Length: 576
Ligand code: F6R
Image (tube, rainbow, N blue to C red):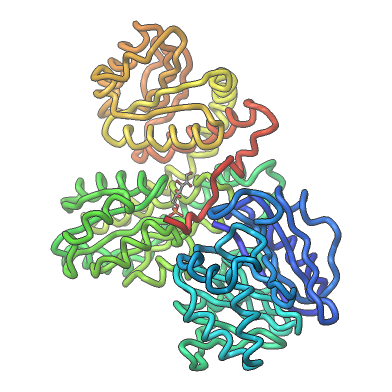
């Protein structure tokens, strides 16, 4: 959470930074700010609100830093917005992460110097004090690095025009465009200028002037320059009204890309799974639902494994051994709950990850890439269906039928546009209906139960309608008491489970529910129905419908809702 960017080159820094921040806005949008360097001084523009609302003046200067905030410490207001500046205005800092010893440092640095309630503000004051002792920037950085505890990616702009950056626990990437240098939370802000990226490693710090130099523990270090094959155009809306819509529609392509996993990698992954004493699969939020479905696929292929959300699995860290394997699911590869679990165990790690070069990718013995391209909408869509494709192939590799399963996933991906088009008016009708409701219940059985959890999360997080999901069989064990006249109950049906799910829906209808069926069954007695053709991978098609339904419902709830930026949330949850 929180996006940071830093630029030096021959262009107007404020323009490049504002444009780059818009690509990072998914990481937080409580407030925004920018600082640029002009003739030995630093100018700052910051405030509460979105980038366009806050940054207007087009500050001059060819070096600068920018920030988009997801608040952790301190209220959302102008004072707490980044950049934060030292008491003598010589240092301005943007930061992503948490400084855990900020209270102790605040006391030591002198509370009277502080303007904000943030943990970040200790960084500029610390740097100012270090600069008063020496002008050797390497020493300054090393001392500052040693004083800060917690997880942070931070960049400081100095009134000399130089910049220093620190990385521990939170992501920071250098974009190397020759005579232009970028530093950012991910590659999307600089893809337009360069595909050359340097992913900083733990406790690296960097001095940037005309060039950049990376150090670690007082030594100069070389880090590999990697080529990112994401297309800058992929990180734009391409004519869609929202990223989320674009990302739903492009799943016909992204699921295909996920299906083109390298056979050798899949076999290596199976070897890791088979060698392990115990296998765990884990993730958070939508990625945890991918993990749950993955556990079902792998068990069907004869692999026994446990599935649990990462923040919960961490409580069992002492039961996880060196001989075990953790399959970590994450779009961003930066989710703190997952990374923290991995840090606290010494099990091997197989990452299933979208963002190449992310921390999960780097911490994994082997990564299988989801290949969905940049996912900008805060609600995960194409990464989820891509994760399902990768997991299906992993199970297929364990079962010796990669090609057959790959073919079936390619067929499914071809059907996505038709399913959405054929059901367009139905989805529209259902979204109008749902947009006037306060509650909704999603049910399904077996794989349909997990699809219903993902569908429910999508609806609640972007439309703010309260919703719950559970196994159809559970309904009559309690929640049915909440059903009244006109309560929406949405059921996902697949051939193997449809008759029981239909019975559960009928039980709800008898008590006044409006029932909405999504599946490959006869349309009998539903109030609304979305027909999904027969397919080997119905979860993917049902999920695409659920995503579009949530998106349309959110739009119909009123203009104050932006489905790309749901309130209180941010993508890439880098705090625990
Ligand atoms: C929901 C959503 C989140 C993420 C979760 C994990 O739509 O996007 O629940 O799935 O924060 O993020 P990653 O997959 O980046 O680890």
